[in-house]
Each structure stands twice: as structure tokens, then as C-alpha cells.
Image 1 (cartoon, rainbow, N blue to C red):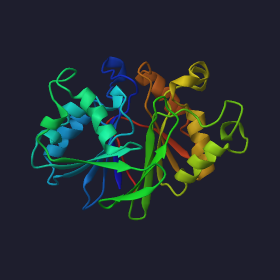
Image 2: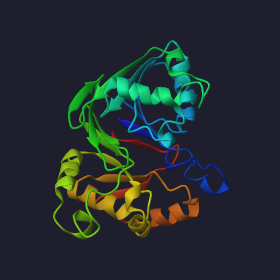
Image 3: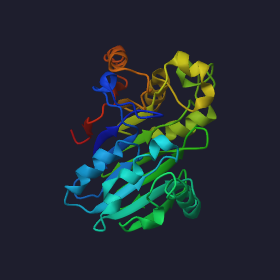
Image 4: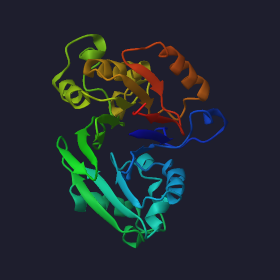
Length: 285
């Protein structure tokens, strides 16, 4: 499997001179594997460039999964070119939602008022699949599990397996313990952390929300985002060898993210990298 980052920013897209190196588009990642349909997770503004790229690819089968429906994860959907191409076959994954309810949330966004496109007018054939949180489901050649996260309004992360490789995309989540409890402070995991650690075991790669510094997290604990030290502690507890820090704060400049990358450059357990727009990770080596 290969994972490619098309949008790595949280909350709002921030294109500009200070974000050129890491990118200013909001959340969108691509998962690909030989002979398998492309899987897209989240449809933030990074989805626009990805959609144009996919138009030039031979495959016309596409899997699109949403973690939740906050606008920074859906804003790219009406600008995602494959949904305008009748030749594409698109399966939309909706974790933790009844199909009718989740489709209704998308229809509220694409209703002819907030955007000219209305959901029923999408030219491509689109079908909707509900994922039951905690259960693994076969989606084409991928084994997919939706994992409930800690975010206002709810969100689900994805564990995706193909062949003997596994990765997880856990964005928009606060820690699963109070600041003085759990793995981040060297204590036994809380019950909620044990559930997350179990979902992370056996991974080759983890992408995790680290929007805040620890200090900023302590000031904004109800906002539903995490910080690097917590992500590293979770990955270490689960034995994950490679961690990508993701959902960068809109105010984080390239210079600040370079400093963050340098801080974790020597980490080996896990190896820590920062998600960068246009960057790819090939799990086959």
C-alpha cells in the first residue's frame, strides 16, 4: 500500500507564503495498492487536486471515506472531479452513521444554497455504505475498520489493511485520558486508551491528529484535537513503528513545523515524521 497526503491542515485551508513547504489544504489522503481501487479518506480542500489527478488514471473505481462531516473535511467534495464523471464508480463510506442520516448531512451541505451542486444531481453513480464502528468490513480488496474517536459531534478513524500491510488514519481526536492519566504520563492506559491501542496493534503506519502543542491542548481541551507527545505515547504503547503527525494547526508556519520535525528527528520508537502535502509513504519499501 502507498499513502499520499493531498491535504494536511486542520480547521481551515491556509494557502500562502508561510505554508508552502507543508501545504495549506485541509484533510485529504489517498491510499493505493496494485490492482486495487483508489481509496480517498476525507474530502477537504486537498481533494480538488487529487480529483484532477485521478481523472488521468486508468481505474474508474473509487472508494471515498469520511471521518466526519465538519466542513474542513467536506469542503473539497463538490470540487472533487470524479463525482462529475459518469464513468467513475464511487462507493462512499459513512462510519458510525445510518446511510440515510449520513446522506442527509451531505445533502444539507450540497443543497443548492451553500453550493450550487445538489447531492441528487451528482453525475457519477454513487452508492453509500455504512461502517459499524468497531467491526471490520471487506470493502473491495481492503479490510476496513471504523474506530470511534474523541471529537465534538463524533468522528471515526480508519484502520485499513491490504495484503500483509496495515495503516491507520486517526484525525480529529482529543486524547483518551485526562492530562494526569494514561500512557502520556507513564501510567497504565485508561480503558478508552486500551480500546484505541488494541485498534492500533499490528500497524505499519499511523497518521494521527497533532494539531496542538501540549500547552495549547491544555488550554483547549474541549476542542477535540491532540498533541505530538500523546500520539507518540499511543504509537509506542501499540508497537507502531512509523508515526506521521497530521492536521497541522492553521497558524503553524513552515518554520514552526520544521522545528517540530527537528525535535522528533531522532525518535526511533516510533520513527516520527510530519505529514507534508504531496508526500507519499510506500509500505512495500
